Amino acid sequence: MGELAGNVVGLEVILNSIHEGLLAVDREGRVTIFNQAAERIMGKSAREVIGRRVEEVIPNTRLHLVLKTGQPELNQIQHIGQTTILTNRVPLYDEEGRVVGAVAVFRDISELKALAEEVTNLRETRALLQAIINATSDAISVVDERGMGIMVNPAYTRLTGLTEEDVLNRPATVDIAEGESMHMYVLKTRQPVKNVPMKVGPNRREVLVDAAPIIVEGKLKGSVAVIHDVSEIRRLSEELDRARRLIRQLEAKYTFEDIIGTSPAITRAIEEAKKAAQTPATVILRGESGTGKELFAHAIHQASPRSRGKFVRVNCAAIPDSLMESELFGYAEGAFTGARKGGHQGYFAEADGGTIFLDEIAEFNVNVQAKLLRVLQEKEIVRVGDSRPIPVDVRVIAATNANLERLVRRGLFREDLYYRLNVVSIYIPPLRERREDIPLLANHLLRKLNQEYGRNVKAISPAAMECLMRYDWPGNVRELENVLGRALINMRHGETVVEVAHLPPLGIKGDFPSGSPLAAGWTYQGESLKELRESWERQVLAAALAYTGGNRTRAARLLGISVRTLYNKLARYGIEV
Image (tube, rainbow, N blue to C red; front, side, top):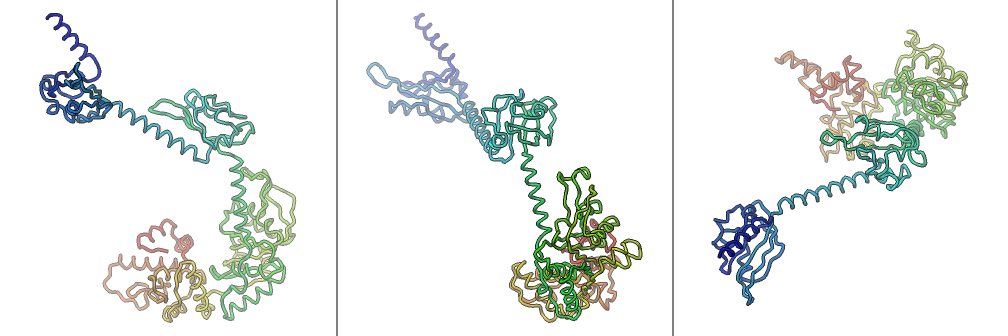
C-alpha cells in the first residue's frame, strides 16, 4: 500500500512539473486529472474541477465528444476567454479496446501567436520599405553602425556601376573613387551633410551626396545616403535653359490681320507700321499700357524681310537692374561669382539675324542705355567681363508707355539714345480715342474667351454694349478683355447674352451701383461715416483693378499702398479678380 501511495505521489509531482496543461476524464466524462499548468491556463483550481462533468466546468471543451466518438482531435485551436490554446484530445482504451476515458494535452500559445503576427507585420513592413526604396529614382545606400553596407537600391547600382555583391557587407568606402566617405563622416559626427561633391564607382561618376545618421531610441544604428547624379542635374539645367530660350525666341505669331479695328486712328497706326516693317529702321511704339504694342511688334516682324529670323521678346521691367546688362548683352566665363561655365551670350546675340522687342524700354538704367546706344550705332555688343566686341545684326523694336521727352529733360534718359530710337515712332491710340472699334473688339474677344472658358456666349446686349461704349477704358484693350472675362464668369450656364448685370463695376464715372458714394447724383441717406468710407474704398479698389486689367501689383503702386495691404483689403471686402 505504501509503495502504491508513493507511486501516486510521484506521478502527481511529474504531472504538475510539465509545462503543458493536462486534463483527463473517465468513461463518464468526469474530470480525474487537472494539473497545475491546466489550472494556470484555464484560470480554475483542481478543487473546482475534479469530479465534475467536463462540459460543465471547461468552456468550449470537446473532450466529452472525443469520449463519445472515440476519434482523436489533434492540433486544435481553442479560445478560453482572452487565452488561445493549442490542444490535442485523444481517447483512452482498456486492454479490450473499450473507451475508458479521454485526455487533453494543451498549451497557451497567445504569446506565440502575437509574436508570429509581429514577425509577419515586420516582414510586410520590411518588404514595403524595400519596395519603396527600390521604386525611387534616387540612388540610396545604407550602412550599419560599423560602416558596413546593408542595403542599396537598383538606382544605386545603375549610377555607380557596382552590384549588390560589390557593396553589401563591405566597408562604406568601397564605392568611392574620389573624396571622403560621407557614411563614415556621419557615423563619426552624428550630423547630416548635404550636397557633398565626390566621384563614385569604376566610371568615376560625378555625384552630390546627402547623408544622415539613423538613430533609433537614442542609439546610432547606421547611416543612409542619397546620391544625385551631377550629369543628370547638368542635363536638366541645360534643358531648362533651352526651354527658357525657346520661350523667349517664339516665332512672332501675330500679323496685321490680327489687329482689330477700322477707326481712322488705328488704321493710321497700322499703315505706318506696315511701311516701317519694310525698312531696317529702329521702331519705337508709343502708347498706354494695354493698347497692343506687343501685337504691333509681332506684326512688324512678320511683315519684314527678317520674318524667318528669331523674334526675341524682352520685358525690361521684369529684369532686375543688377542683371539687366548681363542678360541683354551676355557675359564671359568667370565674369563674376556664379557665372555659368562658358559664359552667356545674351538676348541680343540670341536675336542675331532677327528682331528683338524691348518692352518698357524706359526702365533701362544709365549703363544699359550707353551699351544699347553702342549696339544701335556700331552694330556690336561687348559682353560683361570681356573687351572683345561681337558684331550683331539685330533689328530693334522698342515700346514704352512713358513720356520719353520728359525723362530726357529730367536727365533720366539719354538724349542721344532717344534720337537713335525715335527713327520711326508709331503712336498706338488708346481705346477711348477709337470707341467705334469697341463692338468689333468686344465680339472678337468674346469668341476668344468662349474657347478659353468653354462657354457658348453668342452676343452682348445693346444695353451692355452701351456701357462698354461709355466707359473710358484706362486699361485699354487688356482691360476690355478682363471685363468681358469677368462677365462670362458672372453668367449662369445656359445664358448666351452678356447683360449689364453681368458686367463688373466699370469705374468712377457713373457706373457704380445706386446708393454708392461714388455714384452720380448720390445723396446722403443716414449712413455712418464708417459705412460710407467702406463703400467708397470698396468701389475705389474695384475701379483700380479694372484700370490695371487685374494687375494687383500695379494697382497697389498707383493707390500708394503695399501689395500686402491691397490683398488684405480685397479679402476684407470679398473682391475677386
